[in-house]
Image (cartoon, rainbow, N blue to C red; front, side, top):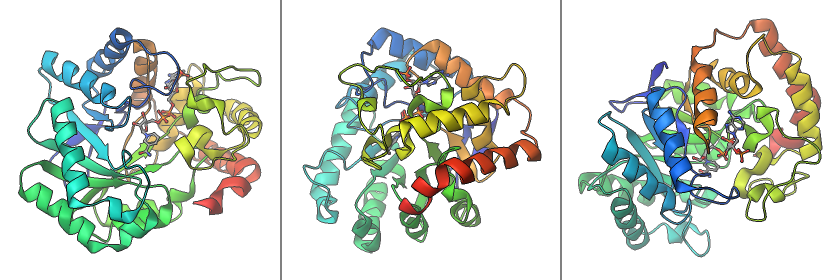
Length: 327
Ligand SMILES: NC(=O)c1ccc[n+]([C@@H]2O[C@H](COP(=O)([O-])OP(=O)(O)OC[C@H]3O[C@@H](n4cnc5c(N)ncnc54)[C@H](OP(=O)(O)O)[C@@H]3O)[C@@H](O)[C@H]2O)c1
């Protein structure tokens, strides 16, 4: 595992880290003992950064991570999020009172007295134009409730706005072979501002693992039952908002570019790591085998310029029109 500097924080984080949404719920049946094994396997592979949120299984994901932390001696940085428990998403909802309540709940779930990194969880666009919200976050830092804060964004423009606030340390954004827009402008800007980028949904909800088929079925409580045609672009960010069948066809094109003995998931993750502005990718994993497969991406050699151009061509020809200007 290789490590990268996380913005201006003191942390060097594993370039393949762990996204802990699926182990909380909304992805079909999960079993806590298997989820813990997946987390353990990731740590064994050198992962030292985990992304979670209060809403992932309403505390379940955070509590599993607290259990992991109790049994491991390694330093593991936990990034959680707040805001999605609001009954409706308004900028006004991101108030002192509400955030204080969410923070206290996360502190309890994570069995700690200070959160390592708290991310605003995709607040509405208006929130980024309210400096008072970022002042409020500074006050939570001063009060010792959180060490650092960042944002998880839906749109590239929100990311560009967020990095104008001097104490925003991280931006979590969708970035994968099917969502290449951050590479146009945002990655360079974040690098210039020394803001750490967390690349989320790196496997396009599993599409970029190459294992999904036209007739793949998902359990009733799996969010992958909707967005078959990209109609719910942002909701759950399922399949990165790409039409499912078009995504499958693009995956088959990408597959032709794979070097020998490299899995599709590893290739998709290595593609993200080719961008040095990215601090880490945070693939979700529900099993130890998935966690290990994903971590192995860090050991792969660089992808050649030719193959990178090939992925860009596939994006331009098959995906770009349906997603590029929508976020
Ligand atoms: N708004 C936000 O802030 C937000 C939104 C979305 C995600 N996130 C964060 O980003 C993380 C990652 O995104 P994501 O979980 O949506 O999607 P993802 O990482 O693109 O896909 C994860 C899913 O793909 C499958 N998978 C993973 N590794 C695999 C492998 N090696 N081989 C085969 N299948 C594999 C697993 O599901 P199956 O085994 O069931 O196929 C896994 O749950 C989340 O966990 C969360 O931390 C944040």
